[in-house]
Amino acid sequence: MLIILVLCLSLGVLPVFAEHLAQAGPKINDDSLVVEVYVKGIPNNPTSMTFVGNDILVLQRYDGLVRLIRDGSLQDRPVLDVAVARDGERGMLGITSIGTTVYVYFTASDVDSGKAIENRIYKYEWNGKDLVSPILLKTLPSDNYYHNGGAMTNFDGQVYAVIGDNGNYGRLQNRATDWKNDTSVILRVDPPGPYYAMGIRNSFGITFDPQTGNLWDTENGDDDNDEINMVPENFNSGWIEIMGPAKNQTQTDLLPKYGNFVYSDPEFTWQKPVAPTGISFVKSDILKDYSDDVFVGDCNNGNLYRFKLNSDRTGFVFESPELSDKVLNTDESMDEILFGTGFGCMTDIEVGPDGLVYIVSLSDEKIYRLVPKVMAEQSQSDKGGCLIAMVPKVMAEQSNHKSVTGGGCLIATAAYGTELSAQVQLLREIRDNVLLNTESGTTFMAGFNQFYYSFSPEIADLERQSPVFREIIKTAITPMLSTLSILNYANVDSEYEILGYGIGIILLNVAMYFVVPAILIIKIRQHSSKRNN
Image 1 (cartoon, rainbow, N blue to C red):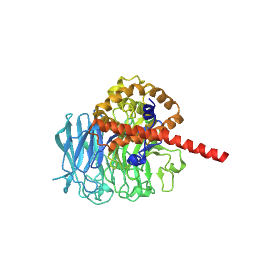
Image 2 (tube, one colour):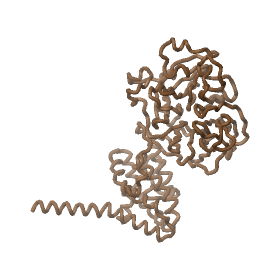
Image 3 (cartoon, helix red, strand yellow):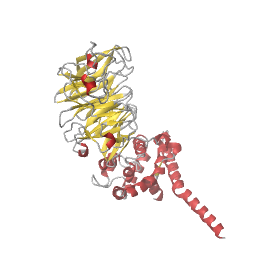
Image 4 (spheres, rainbow, N blue to C red):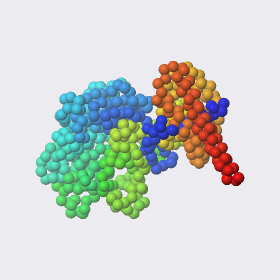
């Protein structure tokens, strides 16, 4: 019984076995939220995602695939495969959906990774398994590998897409010369219509405020002055003559006139480029505290920014005097707007039908999710049982631990939202893929489950009530979690091997938690006795 209790309270991380798990993940500046890795291992540069019902369709930029994520699992079979050019900023670039109708923006090629033909926007129907019935809606230039844009969105039945200058410099870029059309613009795609906005250098993010119907975008500057813009109809963003706020009214007046498009300054500017990408408003009963905010991600730093809207929702309000001019200069602090770090190169931010915020990271090949901490802790306990006890879901559901309001797994509660969360997930996978594939492992856990949950819910409740107590438990279980990760390196082919590994891990924990401390105590007492004599 003592050995079982040691296993329960002391799983941990020996650096020699779990160094690869010690990488710091994303962090956010709100203790009431945690960052989950919703899906990992999305290859070939995931760029953009859309919800179709509860399913997610995500683009892989390099190989022209659209992948399905169902119930939090990346499905093996692609739902669409098209030939794309992949050099520079080309590839699978944008996706949005209305009901079961899905719109995809990509750089077409004759063969995978071949020479670019043009950018194309297709409309498909989603049948639950594949994207079918393709209809070509729009062709756009791709003369150069840069500034192909690609972000898409929709509002009130209208679909929009954005493309950058693609190396063209004419009237749509505020130069008084004719040049190629359909560049530096936000387009009405379906139904088709006149340009919605012009003068855009390049953008990786457009979205609508669900409360006002105002369109917003992010725009990448050249060597400086990245922007966030509120984009009214017939908006002129100013490129190539203006990036960031105009120097004076004369500079604005000198812009060549194109139709009835009107320039206005950005709502926010980064003087030092951060490469802003995804942008999203939060309309969610679960995340009501953020209903008057805008989230923006960047690619250069992996930062997630939070901007507070003014009462009219037409701009931002700042407490810092440094930001009152709506410009973050290179020598100024971004603490007020910095909401999260460590997300890698973010390329899309979406709010799901569950009311949670989903973030695509191109560099991390993951989709992250922002979840209320209380919900996340309980979800982890309910979803997979305790990873230390390694109880299969069906056993956990049959146990007597408490429901949504409390109880659960003390280890999951201590680890959630910390650097140990990745180890917890790994151990859950070891449980399912290694231990439960042996009769002895399954038999042991069936009995162990009843023992563990005789005390775990009460300790988990105390952790929720006391952050200090939770930190103590987290520190205590850290060494034990590492020893269990040894199983990740084991080739278990028989019952005898799993028993051997199990006994070895038990002995290792006994040594760490009892033998080593006992030896230290004895040595200290001996040293103290000698000094007294």
